[in-house]
Length: 114
Length: 114
Image (cartoon, rainbow over all chains, first blue to last red; front, side):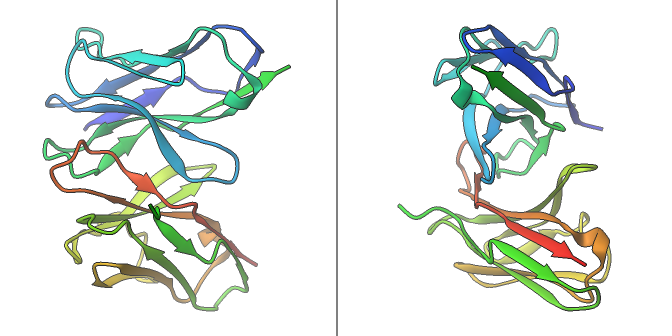
């Protein structure tokens, strides 16, 4: 069945380091792909999205490119800050109707140290 | 604009007690989702509604769980009787039909069953 797999955490980086969090998906169709972020004690919020192959989503210095050939949607940031410490979830739509019914990965915890 | 509002934020109860969690979705949204988050299982979709009608409750763990949406602005998730393994953070989320598939999450209700 359709699924999303993320690299296991926690990922610990020093401030200003380069970040990559890997995400791969399996899908029968052509899903939209999302990265959500969860700060401590809060709900998830959308970080960025891409709706078709080769689209690049970007927000707050984070980027991810929808790669159909490798079924990947890796999250990157050139220089992380302490405030980026959070749990990051990769997700895909379950169906083509964009209802918001999503399949989430297991989440990757990012810790950024000063 | 008000986001998704959940109550209570924290609930501590004893095994066997009834628990009711509440959610007010974003006005105008057609879909409402209930998720459960635990360390072991990550984010699990319990049930979702479209225009107040339950569409898929296959994620509801067992008969002790029930959810209702009596109108477009209110939903409840009830656990009766509660058990320690129900301890988790329960999130409500809403989305707009015909949108991009983005989910808008509440801040969650952290349930502890002793």
